[in-house]
Length: 328
Image 1 (cartoon, rainbow, N blue to C red):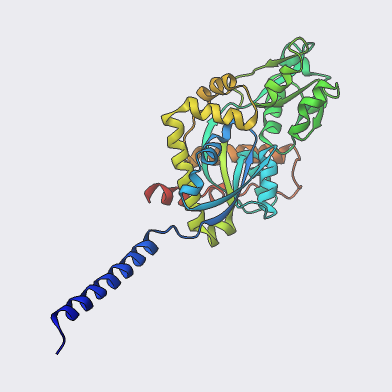
Image 2 (image 1 turned 180 degrees about the vertical axis):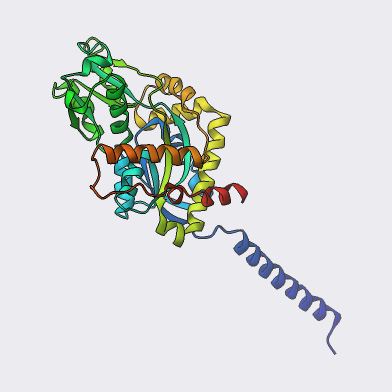
């Protein structure tokens, strides 16, 4: 007959075994799943604040992502990397997406980070107003929204493209080209404007023309990624929504860390922050309208192939990813 002591001993061993098994189950349940790899392309401009905050605050990682971030001089270069498979999500203004769509590329906008007036002309002191760019060498970046802005600026002053020598450059070459005398001015945004003035306030100045153009800072991906990796995109947009909240809670901190990221005076970043209107959303009707306007401009200006037609931009602006990320 089994003794009472033996029964208690057996019961104790079973209890310990059960406790160990339960602890193992709980450990597995609470352990984070394997982080999803994601390649991210970011331009160098203040308008990409949510991406920079997500980087700095490690929000990607909080959402279970393992980010690999690459930095590019412009949104058009981010788009090129996206199409080439180098990144799966990135930053670009709406204009490069317009050109990509006119060329039959399946680039999609899944959110906008803000809308603001981004561009100014920085020029030699002999160019006192924007009218004085006639006959001058003006730098811009072809296929970007700065290209569109320069067109609007010329139209405002009653000038044609033939009235200037338009020099298409990589944005990273703007400041050195101006300082070296290869161009007389350029159209771009911060941090390049302040970098140019730092070369000599007695040589260069900034000329602002308000009310010409408001850009959308957009979040881009490919249709194939929307189709094959919707969960990954939703998770990434959740991270951007959290970064958006962080910007609203502490705009000064967001401006400061963004300034550090793009090597800009924090005071300049904070002044810009007030006009940036950061908010992750999609106003589809307004965005589609602007893209249609730019597509017509690109075709009329013969900047795309002769047989290019204005596409249905309603298929380019995709709201489903942001809608789902906002609900979950």
